[in-house]
Length: 367
Image 1 (cartoon, rainbow, N blue to C red):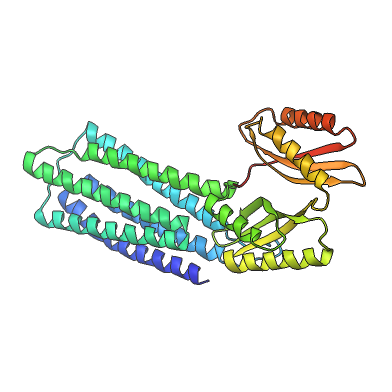
Image 2 (tube, rainbow, N blue to C red):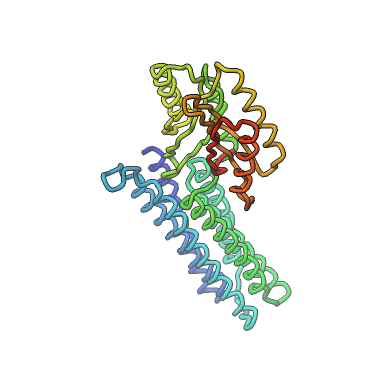
């Protein structure tokens, strides 16, 4: 709740600052006859709209889970990010069109010292606002705020280009507004596309951050009896809600009671330390018969000849069924996964004909 209130507070500050700038720039633009300043004022109006979108999205995202949406409404924040990206892209396209028009048919504006001072103040204001909003966005993990802050900083560049064009126009009587506007519009389009791709990526599902994955697995492996942590899978339901699962490898002589206590402790501690709701599954490991350790090493010796194999885990020999199971993680780029699996099975069956080998091809979803 506190995060949501902070995002709304930052957005309200953005709306107020932008509306003040809209009034000043519109006045200067109409008095001086500068199309660039008038367009800049309209751009500030779209920034205010971005902040309104952020507020609405944050309000919806903060709603409690219900029967239809048991994971909450947090992913609405990513939709908000997409909406802000669309606003930025629309502003970029508008700026590009106007810039081309000014290049084709340049219009001489009548600037005054007062108008230049107002533009300079607006540059400083937008730059400070942009840095503040973007910084708060990163602090609060809000892509919408990051996008709004980036847009504000782009606007500062637009205003700066207008100021530079005004000075050049007054001194040399030429108008470079069109060319400067075209350059800034490209930067705006670039920032809009980046925000759009980031927000879409979160909705589609992105790879787990390597640093988080490493810390989480290392944390889990510190528990007595845990021989390894594998198959870590995390899903975001908004910036603040992560639900996932992991498999841990345990000695096969552990009792159900011991496993129950261990996995419960891991889940509770992971939530307390990382804020992640984690379901813990298990792989049994043969720890009482040396023969199976030798079989596992034999398999590892074969695997080194396949650089496409990133990891083997979950190796277990079920003596009652003469069944050997293990999982393989193979690089996404590899187009012969099934053939590699079949070759490994054939080699192991030749060495151990009394056993049946069953292999699961896992996805490379975390480091």
